[in-house]
Length: 272
Length: 315
Image (tube, rainbow over all chains, first blue to last red; front, top):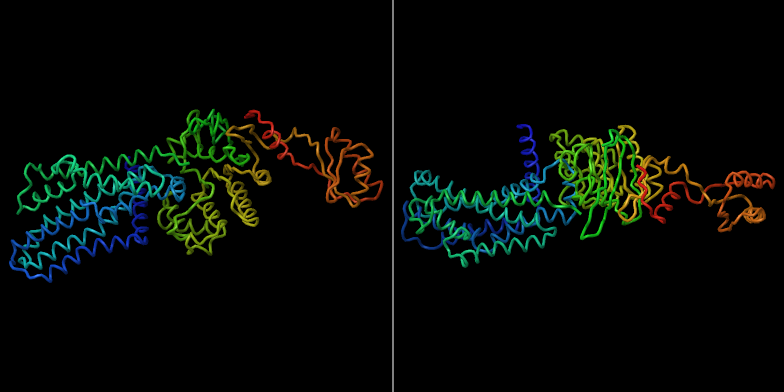
């Protein structure tokens, strides 16, 4: 039993490492690096030029929370470059392999189909985490510095908030990546996969909250607004917002369900 | 399942949009054989191999490879099977070595073993000096060799090759055919090859199945299928073709002369023909250069079945 588990984990690790390393060589990744790093850096530069009236620990924490929340919304919630880049990078992971014909050779090795789907998902997640997470943490810490929070205590006390933000970033990222992997497993052409991912993200980002009201599980904006105040203990949570851990569980379940569905689709996929 | 059959299909069919691309295919591929799947373009050879390798799901019927169901147990099968699809494509971002190393890792080798295995096989297929070249820079033939190298990883018990020499130049074709034959003989492995090139199949295989329109028309050991072939058309080449043509016509043979070769058709008594032609040459002191059937035995079997399709399935 343990041997089979180890074998499957090994397969997933080999594929995810390959996806990660291949991504680093992709030109598209440069566009993502540019966007995910340039946005926070330019925000910080802008902030350092405007005169700051109030400084100190309380204001610094408030500003850091607010700015990081907005950054996460820009990256993952608004239907803008942040989401579009993830869709562009991820949606051809399986569909592109099918389109190029490399999927056949990948499938001619002793692998589970679900290892391929999971490996692709994790490989993309590693890549994007590597791109986004360090920058977001540095962004939060830099703002604490700009607003002159007490060193080092405020920084140490902010660790739980940073960890919570990281968890949220990974989960939101996971949802977008898993949706892209799902459409990549469904379609045999990269273009179809990219367009369908973008359509789904558009519905989730804009129509989700418009159709069902802003406070619902289909609105990614609500996740950020509702969950952050719980972790960022200095702020009041949104009215009627459920417990933060429930939302985390919902996001985890969404990740598992979407990746699981991708695995099933891939297992049933014929390779003509 | 027959205890000697390593691959077996029973009434295996695949329908796409209501049309059969494979219909009631019955095959038994013996362990250790060199099995050729022969048929014209569009006969269903690649689809048959896709069904056997679990790339597509059968609509009905049964397939077993080493006792496993290819569609449901693909992972188990590919531990023992090396597969070369038609026109294999490699990822464009990799070098020859990194690609084969990755595939060897997926086959279950550790990093160091995979590297060693990849280098060894690249050398075997004649790509050793190109290991650092990007796969995009390889020629069609070199890509095919790399695909073949990928199929050889882990010394599989069964090699399934879909048109392995399709995009190779004559030299590469001979090289790969020799490589396949050597591999099968040295390791006593089973090799399944699909091709529409008769001489290739004849040269490499000892068992064949002839397919047309998604059906297996006949299958069995090559010697069994060709032993009853009766050649009715012969070609004769000698030092005096004009005179030989006249002599044969006088004896009563239907023959034509084209480019110095005499084509004799509608032969009814081969024994007599085989005696008379050398005798005419000897009596006139002409040099007999060639006396052979216009079509060889396999070609004759193939044309007989493909032109007059009738499902036989000798196995």
